[in-house]
Length: 386
Image (cartoon, rainbow, N blue to C red; front, side, top):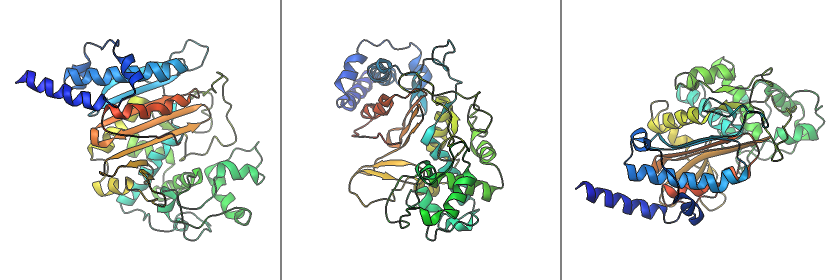
């Protein structure tokens, strides 16, 4: 009976891997598998080994070859089937990246900001259908709701571009409060879209949401996330960047190994500026997937697509990029890019798989993580956005 089950399992797995990039599977054939992989992952040996081999094949072909500097975890059923750390914290020095090295998550930070807002909604402390002006003093953009900030349908301009264009002095650090004040006082100078007319990805939305979280909770953004998510989940190496941390956080580098300098935009949080590790991010994924942290209704709202102007599987929920397939299977993910930091955080919820890649040296190959999805199910994902 056990042999029959093994044969059936291998047959199913072979079908899953049939569409995987042949170059990856060719690389995987010579991969040695750790002897304790099955016992650690809790998976049948054949299944655990298949996932390990194909991920190692991907890593060798796309990341290792391109000079990857960062960390990677792939998990199945919440358990790690592949884990890798490569390179140095400071390129050129012998301070190796390890499991406790926090990376700048870039736009993957939005997943926390979005869920923090939804947690307050779930608790009845705010209403996402209220206009943002209810929570942001002086905010003079009628029709912009908390929900339209969450799903990037606010029509607001992106502060990352317009503040400098409209005369902000680059010698002065921008804060979240400055972003709000700039919108309020310079409205007549800005190109503003009609609220809820269309999807337009915009960092301004999440800088404002962080202010709303602070206003409603009565706590700093860092304190709220720490008390609501990081500490309860044991995410001991996760935090929000604060002024004064410039010399203590992990630096980032361009593809030429040149360190990226901090800029006048590096104090704004909510859209970015959360640091974490792959193991901490797996705890975040598991908490979202296994329930308990949020009500089902809250998660359903987060994972619903709200922008349907264009046909296709791509969409955006409340803090999450989505691929929604005709059979209702979903890929729930977010990517990130800020300075030299590239990040991928993907959850294949219907197949209980998670892919996490964090890097601090610009490497577009990180976004090729989509090539791994077919190892877990029949997907045709093309995710490269931040």
